[in-house]
Image 1 (cartoon, rainbow, N blue to C red):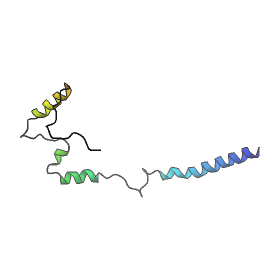
Image 2 (cartoon, rainbow, N blue to C red):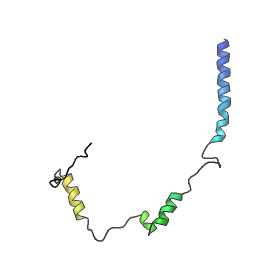
Image 3 (cartoon, rainbow, N blue to C red):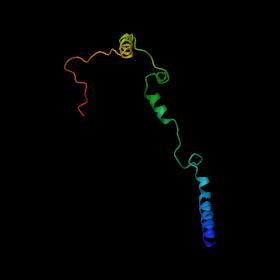
Image 4 (cartoon, rainbow, N blue to C red):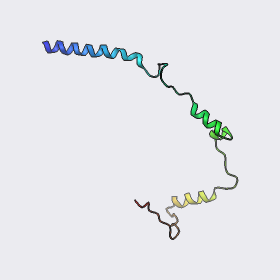
Length: 92
């Protein structure tokens, strides 16, 4: 019987200690760091055209045909072999 009373008192003590944690929510406190979008603002300041961060732009010098052909070769399971003298291993 004494063990039950001690267990109940211990449980009540733990609950009383944990009741103070409700005011420690890090998203509701003013004394902790919170996001300010500083990283996005710095990136926009460094970019020549900040709209490029939203949508990119193409390169007028390249049509993309070589990239499409490479993807098509991989899709059809017919990739090109590397040129002679080039290694394809990492050496590990």
